[in-house]
Image 1 (tube, each protein chain N blue to C red):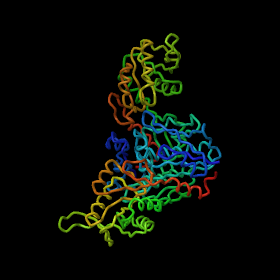
Image 2 (cartoon, rainbow over the protein chains, first blue to last red; image 1 turned 45 degrees about the horizontal axis):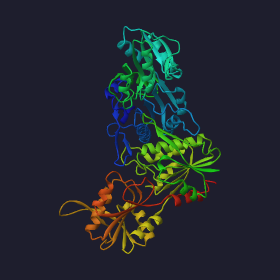
Image 3 (cartoon, rainbow over the protein chains, first blue to last red; image 1 turned 90 degrees about the horizontal axis):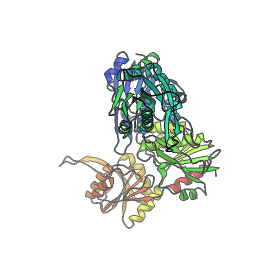
Length: 305
Length: 305
């Protein structure tokens, strides 16, 4: 009475892992291709598993190229509704466009609203996502949603990798402090956020923790997404100058755009810990996100086996 | 009381041309960029022209990369609604995904429905498009729509380029016959469609007109979209073998995917006539689509200057 459909942007998750986490639920992969002119095509493999009258969970991360991933997700939801699914749920490990959650400048769209409302418009009944940039923006979805936080899982990996050192968890800015706090609590570490200041001698913009001393500690820079790595590289350089013993990064999502890994390495970052919400990238130490997320799907009672 | 916003995929249209066709309406271009991680950004230049309380016409073609173009269009509509527009209209010269207008195989989405319903969900009140693959599919939009046909304009260009020859307008298949008929009537020419047959000697699949002889005539292959050019190239070779004096193509939309022009030239096609609904490509003789389309927008009474 329930089936999981892995979308094109869920290729790095194994069917066995998904099925096991959901008590043996059937799992299929959606067919997909691009037409020669560039249009996106997806298809549910109904010949393998019919979805009529069933609860369908679509798993699709909104990895780059984001617009294609978004479009594949919307098409899969419509296909499931069109095939007679009883209800359609979406597990979106990485929610793209989450940072455009308000009109920062007049004339801008609220991109995350466009995404969430489209998803709801095509019949998605529930949305599960992991550490959305702004949890409040998920209200645009309208239906049932859960913002799954996996700081305990991240903390476990950081603690095991950096054992023996005194840790200090640092948020790149005040807005990300809640995330640093949650991770610090899971690690039993102190936490703070970085403030910008201008060096009086050189005129350079630098950053330092608001109150915490990092001297002799291993700093864990905590953020939701590592994109180009620019912000984190600046932070890493600064805390090393301020006497930190070492720097690692812990993020929910590792976009790691072209060149990000080199940028972080050059800045002295010795490890990047992230959930596997996005396709695997070189140099990242991954923490599996699927099992605990699927547990939340099961607990919601919306996906009945 | 009305303003035209040219989206990123309308760059080949001039502001003067648009303004003139709409009796001097103000025209602005939307700002746009891609973030380093690949996300799409658009913005209405409200500092140039406020849209509060006004009718806003968004012009955006769904050119490749289609998913980004679709997303830009949805974001622009949301931005206009968010900026307080009285109503938002969309002129979409080329409607992508129009060919996926039904579930050809079980498990498929109806992609054009997803596109049109999203557009309506974000507050687009009216949709104007040019020669949609399946006009009936536009009903998914829900609101007011017009499918603008510009066969007279195309015919004028073909007649002027191929003057002096007897013309025969040929549709690549029976489904496209209505389009060929409309063009033929505008040209005062005969028309037919191609049927497949298997060559008894070689076993090869070939095509020929159902009834019409093409001997000594210039054949005008009429289609809605030239994508890879494969179908048209086969048709061109066949009618030349059957004694046609020459072959030209007349299409509403010239996607002309990588290599299409060479494929057509090799097959003996001596000219491609198309509306400028898509970014300009080498070797295509363009017929301007904007003025007659905008006339229809003005006549609808929905865009009040």
